[in-house]
Image 1 (cartoon, rainbow, N blue to C red):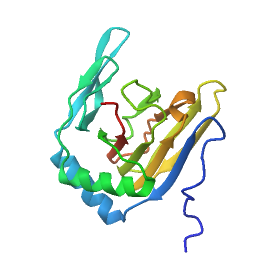
Image 2 (image 1 turned 90 degrees about the horizontal axis):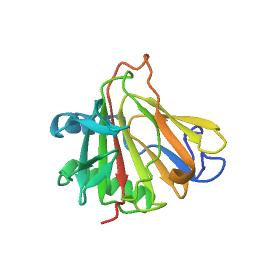
Image 3 (image 1 turned 180 degrees about the vertical axis):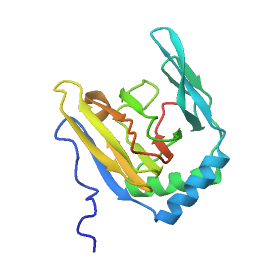
Length: 198
């Protein structure tokens, strides 16, 4: 028995939301196989966002799969149909967290020079207070949270093949980010399964 394995019932947040880190939910080999399949089989495109009226093309790449379109930061993404690999991953995640999802946003970060600034996944198109399940494949990266009111922060290291759940009022009260790190030389794929409002 691994005495240092994460407790999936432990809430990482001290207040105003629930975040559970389940650790790896698949073997290292399984995670590597999914990474290879998705990195070569997904039609990746650079993300485009509108910030203060300016259209910006990000260095990271994204793909949107599922059953409904997704609008955020001034852009709308039409959903691609589920691939077999994504259907299998979705079923695995749904079984672990007891929630069903109808969409998934995939992010591809080439190395630690690419990250994601502070934000909340609180668009009206996402079912309010629903669970967002995040699967990590590839490079281990730090993932951080910051309370919107108090400014308090905390971080967790996301391993390859791991699952992180953000639930309840987390998106209302907390920001999250993927900090850049010059030490990270390897790529990472992140999948966030969501329940979108149809």
